[in-house]
Image (cartoon, rainbow, N blue to C red):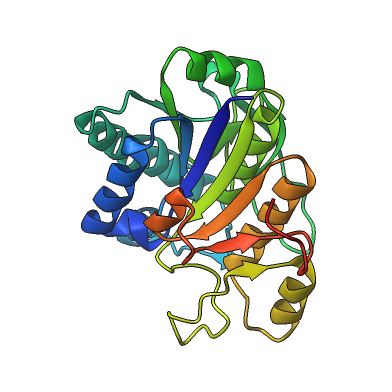
Length: 264
């Protein structure tokens, strides 16, 4: 079975020109089939603030009312996505910028109101894996922004970590998939105040322990939740780290379903 790399970049990488270029150069040089998913970084927050709209986050996820949805759609699918695609093209990587609505790749449903009303936030229900395989087989590198659609004309804001995991899971029917989350940190930290305290591996038991103690919090929680979901659903390996994680560097954190699981 052919290998496929699904990489997600976000956070400080997107906000820092040099860091973004470094990650994209590493990604572009990888010869195997690959797909990229990106977040929005602080770009959407900056635009919202200039428009007098207060950005709101709960548990690492954005509250997306109607005005916020308009902004994130412009910023994610326009400014951020096309900038990344243009950079990849300059690196001889045949990138194809996509949202979930393009080619009907990612359908979602609007998250129902609960204790928190997330607004126009989508939970993925369908990944069009056959279309994505056709794109990959044609030699293109899909570059997804964090937007999906409901099939009835409504765009939805969707967590980029979740998109990456669901794409990786769906394409596991056709490829041996590894999923890599690239961020500003070199991996999951045992001490949030020490950037060198990278955990080489983390299993589900240790994750729950660190979360209960407040060491793992905010945006790292949904990231690890999606990482474990990916492993439970056929993704071969998941890593979290900086750009070096794209090449399975030992500075990255490898996610394991068990703390004692041996490397496959």
